[in-house]
Image (tube, rainbow, N blue to C red; front, top):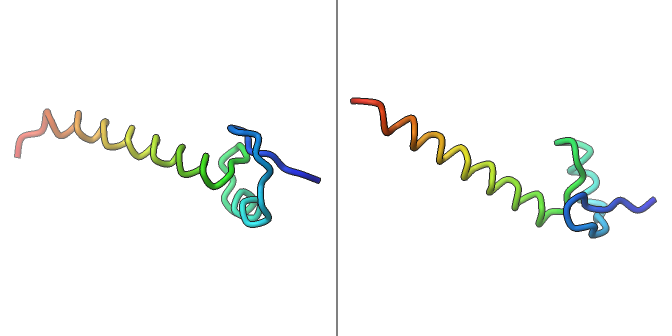
Length: 58
């Protein structure tokens, strides 16, 4: 059975299927789309932390 990336519909390799099985995040992603989502989440965290830091006094 062929598994496709939820984002770009590329066929997943055996390694990508294994990663998605061991560390499920709800959708199947290829390595490229997975790193793209990770970068997006990291950017959101950085933006939130910047806002929090703006109002704190040391």
